[in-house]
Length: 459
Image (cartoon, rainbow, N blue to C red; front, side, top):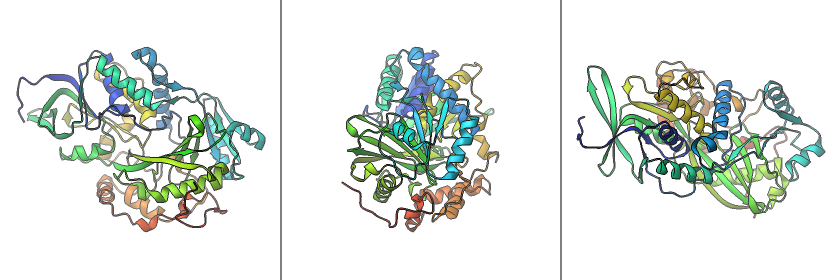
């Protein structure tokens, strides 16, 4: 498609102004490139997230990405001359069964970081601050795991890309990719937004999160990407909670607790393997709130019984069938780059991804190998068959409703990408049976302290 010759063309176009898109834009500006940023929600408001940079163990490829990105974040303040809100709060992971204790021990032995495994009850109490339930039998502590202030970093990134001369198109929605066909193949020239305006660039980076797959459909491209609705719940009335982040792995997702000012605690549940959260809807799932509140107070921290749920919001994560991001060029279309599929860990990976893409674009040698994240791994059927995220692949027995069905419909470990795409489309259409959601989803072991669904929240 030919476009007007007088439209200003930039070196790079970034679609999406979340932490990944803004980090890519800033790195390219730092390297001397001209950049335009487009985002339909670029309004300047606070975006809620935990901001953890901790590694959820299990996949060595993600371990390398996490380590490199953490190093990049630690050097970002000096590199870009901006405030990052990076704080060394530390991280504590809970073990609630003997099997999980063994897993934490093994991870501790293999880790190059300074990590301590604690099993003495008094020392656990000292580290956690708040009283804990008898189910907690061990903790793994990392003293200096950094955490980003998400409000600080988003505001800093926005201000810095603007200061560095980026063209910002806020409240704009991309409706069409503009391509040109010639003997050499297909070249992406830019995009058209809802208002009809056109943005042209030599290279286009799509960092639009879970909707990236929907955008690519306008190019008749299919990316095996499904949504995961992540809940962020704020509790008030929790005393003496640890300053460190507290993480806990369930069968269906990761829990992360972040202590706030004034006796408040934010709880994140990513629902990576929860079929009810495989949706683009941002409506809060009241059943999940009830179950998380009850589970937390019964199995982890009794003080949450009297805590009040002050607020809850949802954000959408993007999940691939191998639970690894999609980062790199799209094979066969010149000028198209992807940076998505972070499964709710966008803050943890953003700066490492940005600096790696910047190095590749400028012809430098990148410090991170992007081959495991290449988009064509799905087209060529060269992706590892993980039925569950490695960090949630517990070997001990645990039963809950819908596991086999969800794994088959959404993750398709035994068939090629075509079957996966069909199944993702099914999930997009919300055909998952609501009856699959039961209290057994949150049971840790045979004790099963939660007895009935829909238990009302306290306070």
